[in-house]
Length: 494
Ligand code: NAD
Image 1: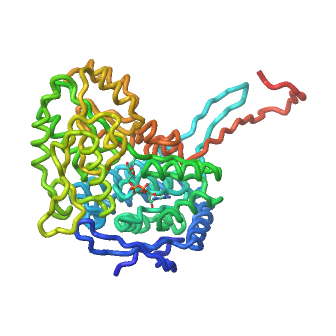
Image 2: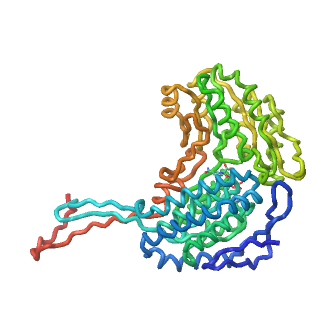
Image 3: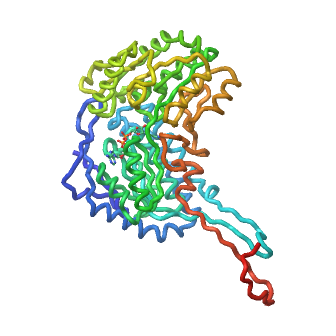
C-alpha cells in the first residue's frame, strides 16, 4: 500500500503518526493509498525548517527565484499525462478535465516565472527638497496554504508558486481526499530547484488546519474550500495575528436572455452545470430563463440527457462524485427539492455504470420551478444538479441574483451589448462571463470572487497575490550634498 509522504526540510519522509486516512478511487471504492494525519511535532519541524530557510531565501536574487519557475513550468508540461492520470484515479474527474486542472495551475507557474516584473515598488523623486520616497515589497516569512479536493492540481498551484516567488517559504496542506497529484507536483517543484525548507508539505484534516492557524511563526494563510471551514480558518488565523484570505462556496447563476445564440448557450450551460459532476466552485448551478427563453426547457433537458457518465479514466462527460458521503448528500438534497415542490424533470439518482457498480455516480439532474426559499437553491449542492428559475425581465433576474448572498461567478447569455453592459454594471458578483459560462480569470488578473464567497480583500493569484504575500515598506531618504547645517526644526514639515 502506498503511504503518501510529507516534505519537511527538503526530505520526503513517512509520518510517524499512527493515524492514517484512506484515499479511495471514487469510481471503484478501491483504497489506492493512505495519507497521514501529520503529528504536531512534524508540523512544528516543518514550520521551523521554513523559518530557517526564509533567512536565506528572502535574500536570494529575484531572478534566481524566477528561473526555478521557468524550469518548473517545463517539468509540469513534460509530466502532464502522468499528472492527469494520478489526478483522475484519486479525484474521479475525466482525463481531459484533469489535464485542464493541471493546465490552469501551470498558467500560474508561468506567471510566477515573471515575478521580477511583478514585485516592483514605487519611487517618487523630490517629495521634498532633496528627499526621495520609495517603496519595496518584502516577503512576509512563513506562509501556509490549505486546499480543497476539487482542484488538487490547480489550487495548490494558485498558492505556493506565487508565495515562494515573492520570497516567502511555505507550508502546504493538501486535501486529505486526493493529495497524490499535489505531491507529484511538489516533487517536480523540488526537481526544478526549490531549495530545502522553502516548500514543506504536511497532511491531515482539522487538526493540521488548526495547528497552522495557531502557529505563531506562520504569517499568512491562504484557504480555498467550503464556506463553513473558510469562516473557521479566517477567524482562527486572524485571531493569532495572521493575514488570511479564504475563497469559499458558491451558487453561480447563468442568465439567459431570449436573444442569446441558442445552440452555443445550451452547450455552454450543460458543460458548466454538469462538468466535473458539478464539483466546481464556478459551476453554473442555477439558470434564470428570461422571458421567452423559458421555452427552452426541453432543449436543456435534451443536452443533459446526452451526457455520458462513467469512470474518469474512460474520459466520457462526467465522472463520479468524490466520496459515498458526497453522493449521499447530493441525493439527500435532490430529495428535499422534490419534497419542497420543485419539478424534477431529470433525475440522476440511482444510476449504475457498467464495470463501476460501486462508483459514487449521480447523473445530470434538473429541477424546474425552483424558488429562492428552497434548500436546493439556498445550499451549494456541489453535484450535477441544475436549478431552473424564471424571470420576466433582465431587471428581475438581476434583482434575484443580487438577493443571493454568494458572489463567486455568474454569466449572461445574450447578443445585446446594452443588456450585457447593464448586467456587468449592476450585478453584485465578482466574476462575470458574457456568453462564457465559467469566467475564471487568467493570472494576469486575479481570482475575484466576492461577498459570501470570499473573506479577505485579496485574491489568491495574479497581482493581488503579490500584494497578499508581501508587505510594503516605504523609505524616505535625504542625502546631504553639503556641510551646511539647517538647524533644528521642531515642527512637522508642511
Ligand atoms: P472543505 O472545506 O471540506 O475542505 C477544504 C480544506 O479544509 C481541506 O484541506 C480540509 O482538510 C480542511 N477541512 C475540512 N474540514 C475542516 C474542519 N472542520 N476544520 C478545519 N479544516 C477542515 O472543502 P472541500 O469539500 O474539500 O472543497 C469543496 C468546497 O470548496 C466547495 O464549497 C467549493 O465551492 C469550495 N471551493 C471554492 C473555490 C473558490 O475559489 N471559491 C475553489 C474551489 C473549491
